[in-house]
Image (cartoon, rainbow, N blue to C red; front, top):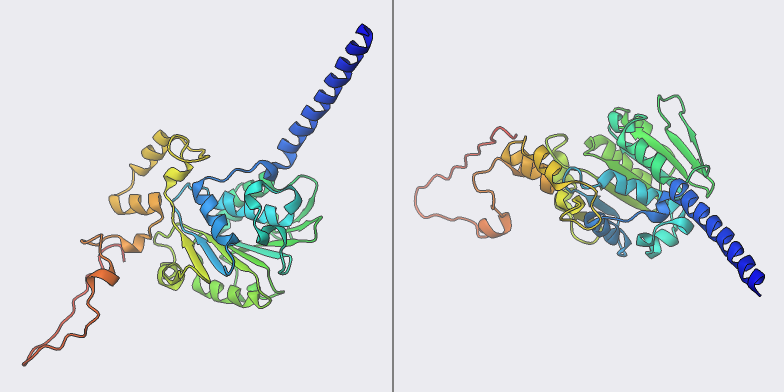
Amino acid sequence: MQSQVQEWTIQDQIRLRNLVRVKLYLRENEKIRYFTPNEGQERFYSEISRPGAFIVMNASGNGQGKTYGIIALAAALCWPKIASPCFSGEIFKNWTHPKRIRICSTPKELEDIGSLQSAIKELFPKNRYEAMKKGKFYPSQFKTDTGWVIDLFSYEQDKSEMAGPSLGLLIWNEPMPQDLWNEGLSRMRKGGLIVGAMTSLLDHPWVVDGILNKSDGKDVRVIYSDIETNCKQHGKNGVLEHDQIEKILSQYDPDEREARKTGKPLSFSGRIFKSFDRSVHVSKDILRPNGNVSICQVVDPAIGK
């Protein structure tokens, strides 16, 4: 009896060691299994999951985890069987659009050491995709073992190069040139989803009225979240130290600090009345003064323009 108990104990130890090895392997090679979103990323995925979405933008502050979050989204769609539980929505489990993703970004973000490439290397499961440079200085096309094709597109490329097959998912990382945005829309002819991750500063200010202000909670959805949602001390599942966040933000002027912290577009800054709200402070009635009166409007564009 004693030897039998000892034998079972040894077998249990062997099984435990094997389980530990498997767990360590998965954590190292299939990190998308263990991805845990912060509060801002969670809200972003929630809007994507809610039926009816066409354009969903994460316009949060710098350092909120926007870029990492969109690559996690791409990985979850390509490998739904091993995706984190946060991707449990119907759209993630049963994708009905073309299995084609295009990720558009600035040249620096696309480089080998850029944030996009770093996130891909970390979150895409090892040995389950093929990376090709296709004449670029960095991997610009990925083919997965689940039938997806992903290509990377630089904002420096001509809009004519945006032509090609219908896309299922179009990802924008940082504010984009308007002509590329317009061309990208036509690639969605078979249905699909457009998502973006951007902090609107002074590059391509057209995105404020052209995209962000068109949010209706239906076809177009925009979420804003503070960098503090990615803070270890004040956020949920954050990864940044609060002291370091404050050190960085303290180097900017008040308007830029607010934009980088909250995601609130910088083109809204520079106003004397920062709480101005057109729906509240502008009369809907037409002015009809009596008598010989001239009406003038003077606009001071300020240095931010």
